[in-house]
Length: 276
Image (cartoon, rainbow, N blue to C red; front, top):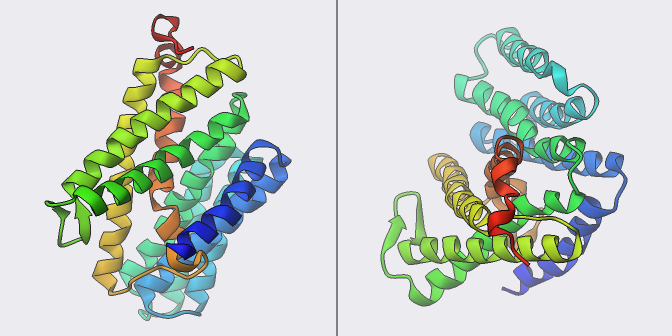
């Protein structure tokens, strides 16, 4: 718990500064760093080695995907094709030393992890207030926090014992409820002090959906860890683990928030259910 508090005390102010006030190039650099480390952690997990050409290649492609989106977002298909050719070409060069699951880990890191972190750049480029970029973090960390404490105090029924033995149904429900509360608080703050007109009911539904997605993201990366027999992806955040331990839910939630703001903005900002 002390380690969790320490990471939060040091990390949250940095996160808020980078998201709200830092120049776009600083945010892009931070996202590249997170994506690169995430790609590296995934390849290390799957390959079972800390250092190799493939680990380095996975880190570079994951980070490069974010940088590519920053500079030329309309050419994503070309990037994904090049990354597929790169990984399979490297595997062919090694003459069978590299297995299919290692290739897929590299491609997942380069395409999915990089694409998910780049969602923050796409949200910023859409012209919305940068405070919205905090929402994926809020709807990920709140769900995790509420689920943890609810499960700790009320947990009785296992949610997915073969994937994550400590998670409970009660904790999952607590995470969903906590997410809805935090989503509505976010709407209240945005409406009162930032001139928004966010609808309460759609925001609550978005928070609920993100809570479900956040827990799927958490369990998905836990599933990978269990398959390859590791406890944490890394130690970057001390007891929080590595990037994929801390941001597993964010990687799933950020694209959902992006899609919601892109496709359903007319509903989300309906004045009929406005807060404040």
